[in-house]
Image (tube, rainbow, N blue to C red; front, top):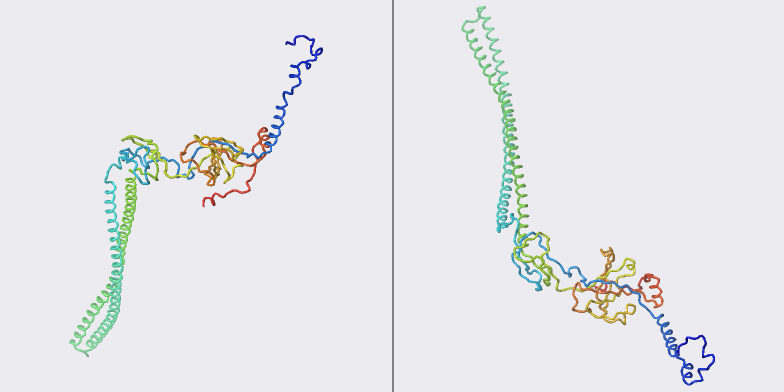
Length: 451
């Protein structure tokens, strides 16, 4: 019945006196709902005091714990041209297996016998070094011989000079004696001539004395000539000594010059030998670089340079390889404001892409499909995405990570922080406050855990 009139029937008629009125107006409709609300309020109030684990959620990727276990690309240290492939994508290779063979593209390395010819040049230069060493030794012996010969000739010259001095001394004595004899003969001749003029001596006696005077004068001249000749021999002896010194000084200087020249040529040849040894080692090493080999056991992921005859530069990527043996890890990125809350050894829950999971971020124990992990490294420098990178590894005390996951797949991580009541976490979230800053009482030492 429509209530379109301002006159109310209920004021004039008691509706509860009717049977239908009793059924309708005397029943308490919301009694059960009120009990439900009361019980729900009590439960909700109790839930607000339940513990809640604060956490930091982030996304990342599966990686490896060690850098040498991560996917890598192989490059060539020299430019070249692809000649032959020994593998195909997906093949398993062991360490040292040949992946492809390349050839030279630089004209100075086209000679296939370059290393052999360089070895021949090295042997020839090494023989030259030995020859120069022998020449240096011979010149040193020659210098020693000249020095000894110089000493002997100087001794001989000094002896001759001494003999000349003694001869001068002897001739000077004879010369003085001859001068005295000539003077006596002059006196006797004058006396005899005076006596002959007085008639006391005969002319014959005067002639005898004149003859003796001439003989004495001739001996005096002859002796003076011998004396001057002896003096001249002294000068010749001194000149001979000077000549010997000058001659041997010139010979020794020439020998010394030849010795230094031979040593210089030997050092220069030795430098050429060293350069040839370096070139030979480089050529042999370069020949070994014509075969690109696997640095470790792994699987060929992708041939970046394909085909035969394709050229490339040094350092250019040729093929991608994934190591066969590796330890899985995951990398997560946290905001700078959350970085002080992350510590080494802390627990992290991980969800992998492709693995179904039911997650209660505040109650990790009741979550399904997540796996345990621990923080092993925290990056000290911000990444290009504006966040800090954190490396985590599997928790050995938790469920093992799935074997089917591969490096590079996506992960979602939940870093577990401090336990707080739910009401506190709601209050924090409503006010946009960061999680509580704290220092864990016990943190595992990664080095001890690794040992």
